[in-house]
Length: 118
Image (cartoon, rainbow, N blue to C red):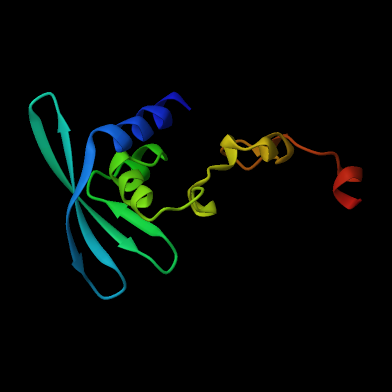
């Protein structure tokens, strides 16, 4: 939560959209991060039809948390909430109701067989 909160804060305070170039199904958006006299550019590929975004920093792929660059782009689209495909199950109240498996696919925690049949 705190990592996401930090990224969200940075998206609101330090990031700005500098350029937007159309591509086949969406846009390549240049986001500039201005922190402590440094300026860093990131490229975000954004598809408006399904609100999918991929950033050149690859934070989503590495850590599973949206980066400030993608959040900056989504903020500019005036969405009231994050699209469902960005909500990680472990962040939700329903996370406790899903079964938990180990690496060998052995059930560690979950509902009993009788509850599953109901």
